[in-house]
Length: 392
Image (tube, rainbow, N blue to C red; front, side, top):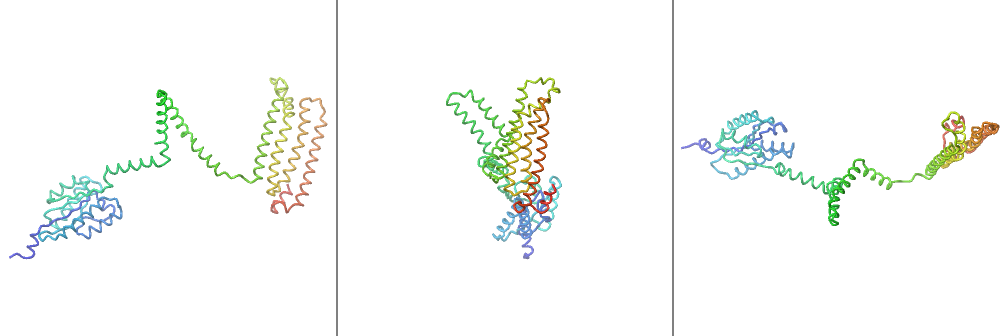
């Protein structure tokens, strides 16, 4: 008559074995193997999945637990089931295989299985299967291949994603679709008129224009110009008046320089002896350019004075005095140009003009001080700035 222990020993022992050849379980979760028992394997699989949801070894461990639960639920009286996980090394090679064999030996000591159901991620079957079969018979192999880890499907998904980006993203579709589309369109038009032999020329022109635009950033500059024109907000009216006056003043001065140089050319002076004729050259140049030069400077300063009037800036008064002095400078330049052209002319007019200019400057200063003191409330200035103005 047999005892209960003898009946237990006579039962077939089946081990559901999960193999992690690259040692991801220990590397990512620091869980030591071998793991024996459903609870330990399930907790380890959850920990590995939380660390790396895309890890195939975690899915293989879940599959091993599922197989174990299904076999146990069938409840065959002559079979005993156990689940275990062993791992190799992240370095691979001989070291990983020896570690797998050592852990398998430990598992077989704790649970001397008659056969093994091997569960792998499908990547290391050829290396692991002979090691297991040399110790215990393998009755079944369950290869679990996660879809996203299949190389062909990954490649197809990658190409699909990039193709979708090329088609739907305007940044790339202009190059990937727009440029070839233009070239094909030109080819079709030339084919209609039997001018296909000109296609190479058209191809070079279109491709060259595209490279020129992209190389020098013409498209980016055009986009910035469009955005600037769209979002442009005109400055305040005083600033516009000041800017316009400055441009008009520089234009007048430029024309004055042109007229002065034209007068020098028309004077028919011998420029080869430039040292001797330099005073006459300066006289002719000043004589014909002085009017527009003075007008240009006065126009630019007048625009600035208008701006400072609206801004209630005390510099308006000094600017007004400067305009008056520069306007009188025209008389000084006229007298100076006459003397440079013909030194025999007396210099009384020049001296008179200078003296009158000095008197105008002094009178302007006094008028400015009087106006500034009587109109302090008009100008937006602090007390320190007012003292600095009076000292200047």
